[in-house]
Image (cartoon, rainbow, N blue to C red; front, side, top):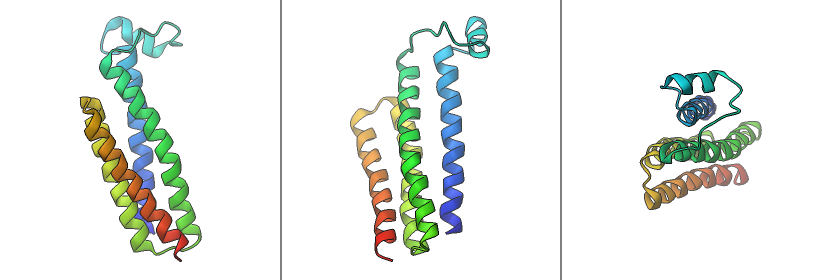
Length: 133
Protein backbone atom coordinates (compact mmCIF):
# COMPACT_ATOMS: atom_id res chain seq x y z
CA UNK A 1 0.00 0.00 0.00
CA UNK A 2 3.05 2.22 0.40
CA UNK A 3 3.31 2.73 -3.39
CA UNK A 4 -0.33 3.75 -3.66
CA UNK A 5 -0.05 6.27 -0.83
CA UNK A 6 3.09 7.65 -2.45
CA UNK A 7 1.07 8.16 -5.65
CA UNK A 8 -1.54 10.04 -3.60
CA UNK A 9 1.22 12.36 -2.42
CA UNK A 10 2.50 12.83 -5.99
CA UNK A 11 -1.06 13.56 -7.16
CA UNK A 12 -1.26 16.26 -4.48
CA UNK A 13 1.97 17.78 -5.83
CA UNK A 14 0.71 17.59 -9.41
CA UNK A 15 -2.59 19.18 -8.42
CA UNK A 16 -0.82 22.01 -6.62
CA UNK A 17 1.45 22.64 -9.62
CA UNK A 18 -1.58 22.75 -11.93
CA UNK A 19 -3.32 25.26 -9.65
CA UNK A 20 -0.26 27.51 -9.70
CA UNK A 21 0.26 27.22 -13.46
CA UNK A 22 -3.41 27.91 -14.23
CA UNK A 23 -3.35 30.92 -11.94
CA UNK A 24 -0.19 32.33 -13.50
CA UNK A 25 -1.49 31.77 -17.02
CA UNK A 26 -4.80 33.44 -16.24
CA UNK A 27 -3.10 36.45 -14.63
CA UNK A 28 -0.49 36.60 -17.40
CA UNK A 29 2.09 36.81 -14.64
CA UNK A 30 5.02 37.01 -17.07
CA UNK A 31 4.04 40.63 -17.80
CA UNK A 32 4.46 43.56 -15.44
CA UNK A 33 0.72 44.16 -15.22
CA UNK A 34 0.01 40.46 -14.90
CA UNK A 35 2.51 40.11 -12.08
CA UNK A 36 0.68 42.87 -10.20
CA UNK A 37 -2.59 41.05 -10.80
CA UNK A 38 -1.07 37.76 -9.62
CA UNK A 39 0.18 39.34 -6.38
CA UNK A 40 -3.02 41.28 -5.84
CA UNK A 41 -6.59 40.32 -5.02
CA UNK A 42 -7.25 39.31 -8.63
CA UNK A 43 -10.23 41.61 -8.86
CA UNK A 44 -9.27 42.53 -12.42
CA UNK A 45 -8.37 39.19 -13.96
CA UNK A 46 -8.21 39.31 -17.74
CA UNK A 47 -10.40 36.95 -19.71
CA UNK A 48 -8.57 33.66 -20.12
CA UNK A 49 -6.96 32.95 -23.46
CA UNK A 50 -7.24 29.48 -24.99
CA UNK A 51 -4.30 28.03 -23.06
CA UNK A 52 -5.30 29.65 -19.76
CA UNK A 53 -8.84 28.33 -20.20
CA UNK A 54 -7.55 24.81 -20.86
CA UNK A 55 -5.24 25.11 -17.85
CA UNK A 56 -8.16 26.11 -15.61
CA UNK A 57 -10.34 23.27 -16.90
CA UNK A 58 -7.47 20.80 -16.53
CA UNK A 59 -6.99 21.92 -12.94
CA UNK A 60 -10.68 21.64 -12.12
CA UNK A 61 -10.88 18.17 -13.66
CA UNK A 62 -7.75 17.06 -11.81
CA UNK A 63 -9.15 18.30 -8.51
CA UNK A 64 -12.41 16.42 -9.11
CA UNK A 65 -10.61 13.20 -10.00
CA UNK A 66 -8.03 13.57 -7.23
CA UNK A 67 -10.82 13.53 -4.63
CA UNK A 68 -12.03 10.17 -5.98
CA UNK A 69 -8.51 8.78 -6.23
CA UNK A 70 -7.50 9.81 -2.72
CA UNK A 71 -10.72 8.44 -1.24
CA UNK A 72 -10.25 5.08 -2.97
CA UNK A 73 -6.59 4.88 -1.97
CA UNK A 74 -7.41 5.59 1.67
CA UNK A 75 -10.32 3.14 1.74
CA UNK A 76 -8.15 0.48 0.12
CA UNK A 77 -5.53 1.09 2.78
CA UNK A 78 -8.08 0.99 5.61
CA UNK A 79 -9.68 -2.29 4.49
CA UNK A 80 -6.33 -3.80 3.57
CA UNK A 81 -7.29 -4.50 -0.03
CA UNK A 82 -4.86 -6.36 -2.28
CA UNK A 83 -1.98 -3.88 -2.36
CA UNK A 84 -0.68 -5.05 -5.73
CA UNK A 85 -4.07 -4.75 -7.42
CA UNK A 86 -4.71 -1.34 -5.88
CA UNK A 87 -1.25 -0.15 -6.89
CA UNK A 88 -1.83 -1.24 -10.50
CA UNK A 89 -5.01 0.82 -10.68
CA UNK A 90 -3.39 3.75 -8.88
CA UNK A 91 -0.39 3.67 -11.19
CA UNK A 92 -2.61 3.58 -14.27
CA UNK A 93 -4.61 6.50 -12.89
CA UNK A 94 -1.53 8.56 -12.03
CA UNK A 95 0.23 8.18 -15.38
CA UNK A 96 -2.99 8.76 -17.29
CA UNK A 97 -3.43 12.01 -15.36
CA UNK A 98 0.03 13.17 -16.40
CA UNK A 99 -0.77 12.35 -20.01
CA UNK A 100 -4.19 13.99 -19.65
CA UNK A 101 -2.62 17.27 -18.53
CA UNK A 102 -0.21 17.36 -21.46
CA UNK A 103 -2.86 16.44 -24.00
CA UNK A 104 -5.40 18.91 -22.60
CA UNK A 105 -2.86 21.74 -22.63
CA UNK A 106 -2.18 20.89 -26.28
CA UNK A 107 -5.93 20.99 -27.01
CA UNK A 108 -6.28 17.43 -28.36
CA UNK A 109 -9.96 16.91 -27.52
CA UNK A 110 -10.67 13.29 -28.50
CA UNK A 111 -7.31 12.00 -27.30
CA UNK A 112 -7.93 13.82 -24.01
CA UNK A 113 -11.21 11.97 -23.50
CA UNK A 114 -9.61 8.60 -24.28
CA UNK A 115 -6.85 9.25 -21.76
CA UNK A 116 -9.41 10.37 -19.18
CA UNK A 117 -11.21 7.05 -19.69
CA UNK A 118 -7.95 5.19 -19.04
CA UNK A 119 -7.76 7.00 -15.70
CA UNK A 120 -11.34 5.94 -14.94
CA UNK A 121 -10.32 2.35 -15.65
CA UNK A 122 -7.53 2.78 -13.08
CA UNK A 123 -10.07 3.99 -10.53
CA UNK A 124 -12.28 1.02 -11.42
CA UNK A 125 -9.39 -1.34 -10.81
CA UNK A 126 -8.99 0.18 -7.36
CA UNK A 127 -12.70 -0.25 -6.63
CA UNK A 128 -12.54 -3.86 -7.81
CA UNK A 129 -9.66 -4.56 -5.43
CA UNK A 130 -11.60 -3.01 -2.56
CA UNK A 131 -14.85 -4.90 -3.12
CA UNK A 132 -13.16 -8.23 -3.82
CA UNK A 133 -11.25 -8.41 -0.55
